[in-house]
Amino acid sequence: MYTEKRPREFYILAAFFILFVLFLYGPMSAIFILSFQGPNGGLTFPMNGASLHWFGNLFETQAVGDFGGAFQRSFALSFMVMIVTVVVSLLAGLAFRRKFYGATALFYLAVASLVVPSIIISLGIGVLFQQLGFSPAWYSSGFGAHLTWTLPFGVLIMFAIFNRFSPSYEEAARDLGATPWQTFRFVVLPMILPSLIGVGLFGFTLSYDEFARTLMTAGTYNTLPLEIYGMTTNVTTPVLYALGTLTTLFSFIIIASALGIIVVMNRRRGKA
Amino acid sequence: MVTVRLIGAGDGKPKREFRLPGWLPPYLQATPLALILGGFLLLPILMIVTVSFWDYDFAQMYPDFVSMNYVDTLGSWVTWKTYLNTLKFAAIVWVLTLVIGFWVAYFLAFHVRTAAMQMVLFLVCTVPFMTSNIIRMISWIPVLGRNGLVNTALVKAGIVPEPIEWLLYSDFAVVLAMVHLYTLFMVTPIFNTLMRIDRSLIEAARDGGASAWQTLTNVIIPLAKPGMAIGTIFVVTLVMADFSTVQVMSGGQSASVALMMKNQMSLLQYPAAAANAVVLLVVVLLMVAAILRVVDIRKEL
Image (tube, rainbow over all chains, first blue to last red):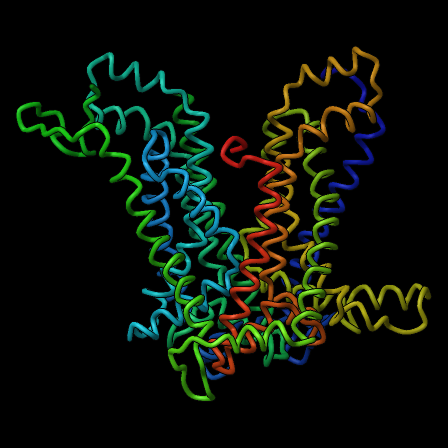
């Protein structure tokens, strides 16, 4: 089959795929280029010179609000969400491997968490906190709101992983006298570790970019996506693009490092 | 009788080992998830249902049991028109993402020959999904705007005499941005089901004399239906819940149910927003339930 000549269908679909990739990345590269717009340039092409003016503008506090603080909060929040998502999804994934009372209900609750509109969760948590007399903050209500978005993804991924996970490895470990903890620590965990990093990457990026769920749950201090959302209505200079370029680069770095770790792990395993 | 110990308990030291009853560990492992979803999903929704029956004025909400909020919501023309508009977006975006998503997944699964290349191309499609939605929306402005790339090119090429106004801040822009944002939710599950199709089925179809097209319509598409259903759930629920794309890309000229809710929330009309939320939730859950009749998610993961 590998020596077969490519059919005409291949070239049509390949062209379609390339168009799709251009569609995905084209607009993003437009704002990437425009963020280097000269000081007198506007929101659209042509470039009016090239400069780092708008990146500098970003760090003057008055110009665009508290960008640094918002970034720090978003980073801390995503980090917390990532850790909790990995641990809770892993535990739930282990639980779902066996039958327990309420398993189906819990599974559908996780699915519901995925399909319930974000803004409803935002409103619900906001009003709940208000009625209980707590003041909402990004690290409490915002944290919980983000978990309702990242956990179902984590649980579904764990579900998929354990569906393909043969129990014979664990049986072998048990037959050789490993305790359940040893079986988990030295057999199961190393095998699923790359997937766990994937879950963590999902948890981090989903939370870092989430804003519908943060709308009513962030409290006094904005997260970065909220800050950007606010800017879309009242900022009319390329400083918006500069911010977009920076946060996108940050996302790329996170994605690349997670993928790097996974690749290195798989190589090591291949050698061992 | 299976003996299972709590993770970390009695690590390798049989003397101090204490045994949990065999049925207990799954409950302990599932508890964190249940607590989080209970506290931040179930409780808030119950709260919304409660508040939707409350009375309110410009400053405060009053615990009560009135149906006023529902009467106001369902009795208004604006609500029905907004729902119709949202459903229209959902239908158009669903069809477009399904068609685009299927062909992209099909290309990746059946025409890319090495697993490594498959992985790389799949990642190329996935990466934008992990970046900010708002930034990806904004990035259409320099492309579609009045002086944007598309208009400049069209005018220079002499295809249109003056810039086309409806490219940005229109329903067209909303649909385009939604397709841009959400197609990946279709690609991933369809790709997943296509990869699990036994290749011998396709060879059997070919040996049986089926043309490429017949193989596609009689073998591949029927087997890809579960993936399409899961993608549909994602896309439909995301579009039904969308307010930011509609707001930014239509420039305030179009409406969606969630945007209507958001405006009520910014006016502190929480009970009205809550009534709207309950109606929206029922609509979305009914749609999902209908799709779930076609597919068993647990089997497809």
